[in-house]
Length: 250
Image 1 (cartoon, one colour):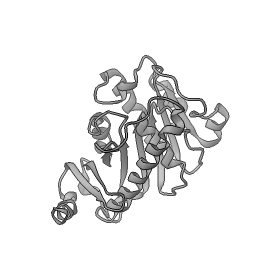
Image 2 (cartoon, helix red, strand yellow):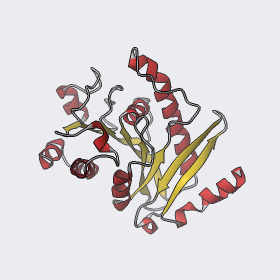
Image 3 (tube, one colour):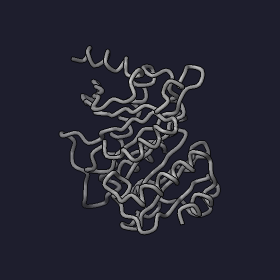
């Protein structure tokens, strides 16, 4: 079965999308479900001009395939997307009581190891995609996982987009572009968002999405918020200023 899976993954570039692929991490005894979707014009991705890659991490108890409104838009704009299932049946549940920062560290570390493993596993199989300038996208706890990994001095992380992440501080690193889109529905832990001074110093963009709910950043959300989210994300990826991004959704 493992041999068949390797062959299957090796031919993926010739198709437009693939679902429910499982990558085996034998060291951690972990089978990782992922969904890979390719750019609409995937034939333009070459060894000379590699296409960009975005890893998408889901929120707690949100199916990892329920961010299609995001992955589809990224595919339309030249990105390969890799949606990751961080919650396997035998994993301990995400803690809901006590000091949530301390009790969830194990979850974030595990997720960061998964992202790192997938990066190493996939980059050799998809040589026409640039895994050395990764974009990480994460919603809620998936945003915390992505932020944790971004704080770990990995020089191949180019951009981080979090959607209402709540617990892990956003990286302060001039080599990583950061966008965080916020909902007012639930409070954010102290220290997660940088000060105004640090936002300016490190080029971190915080965009408050008024009248939005935490789950609006998934496929279960309302169309109005999803459209604004995509508009903000694409503007960020096109290097628009934070002031412009905020003004465009008012």
